[in-house]
Structures are given as structure tokens and as C-alpha cells.
View 1 (cartoon, rainbow, N blue to C red):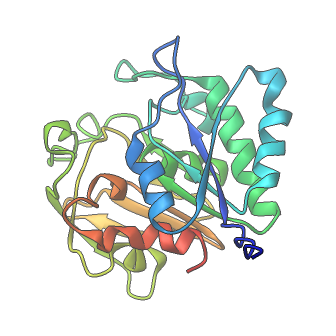
View 2: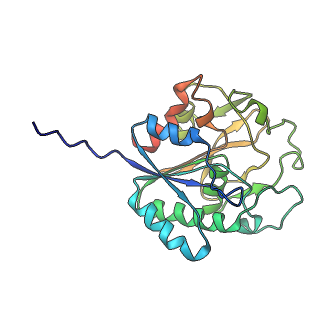
View 3: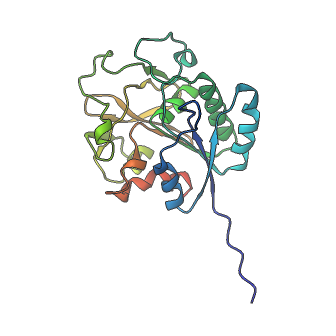
Length: 233
């Protein structure tokens, strides 16, 4: 008896980091979340600048794009100079991911950015960043790596926004960042922490969240909502 062919699942281009030097890096929570919503992750690391067109060919094969976390975005990408607080800057990755975001958006594909990914999404559309939140005068400690799998601070989203959809009724999130969007460029800021840090930016088919929903799924599957949105569910 002939087997019925399986329907092709949505393919998600998962853009990942390049550290340490000998390895690529991605928290498996991103991949697990993509599988959990019935999609197929296609892991795409940036290569040298000369290979960016090849990476964009991979983006063209995908149905949507997920920009993951990692080191700080090069301040040159948003017209500023370096501060002493920067960590793990990878300008070639920045250029590749900004190009990938634009390519996906031009092709009317959805893009989800998480943590650094939200900052990349913002920078791609004219945002600027706080290079260090403590230096910028924010009182709350946002770098809570030892508690990365649990909600640590409140977040409030604009009613009817994609950020509200991503929270799915959860009022607290985890926090592993020392940078954040300062001005959102042509995107809209739609969620904020209780000390005023921008926690989400969005636009047409674009959503960036500063928290890490992929690390909250073990105890609260409401955080799959962002990934369900990514695949069009």
C-alpha cells in the first residue's frame, strides 16, 4: 500500500552565532521551539563577508527567519562609536543578519528576533541601542544569567500588539542582556520592563523581543506563542 506523502513543514532559517572561534553557537531552545510548532529549523551561520549572498540564498529557501541571541551589535551599524562595555562583537555577523532581515522582509516573510536578534531587527530599520543599560542609568539589573530559565521581572505590552500575543498572558519574563533598543527607528516599541527599558519592537511581519521565550518553555508553554506567530499559526 502506497504511503501518503507528508506535507512539507514550514522551514525556518535560524541565524546563529560564531563563538567560540572554532564553533558555531545556538541555544538548543530555539531549535526545540521551532520543532515544537511543527516547523523545520535550517541553521544558518554567517560566513565571511564574501559569502553573504550564499546565506541570503538560504534565507530565500525558508518560509520565515529567526534571529537568535549572542554578542553585542557593532555600534558602527547604528552610527556610534564603541564603548568599553561591549562583549563578543562580530561585525560580519551583524552585516549578514541585517541583510537577511531586509531580504526576508522584502519577500514578505515573517521575522522573529530574540534578545540580540531584537536589537539586530531594530538596527536594520534605523534603531539605536543602549550600549550598556547600567551606564545609561537604568536601575534594574537586566543581566540575570543564573536565572535564565525563570521569569525575573515584569513586562507590559501594548494592547493588541504582537508583543502582547507573544506574552500570551504572561506578565513576567527572563532577562539576560545588558543592551537594549534605545530608539526604535521605523519600528514601534510595544513592550517595556517596569523600569522603562524597551522589551519589544515590531512592524509589518516583524517582531523583536528582548527576553528569551525559548528558555521559558520548560515551565510555561505559553511562550511558544512567538514561535507559533512566526510559522503563521
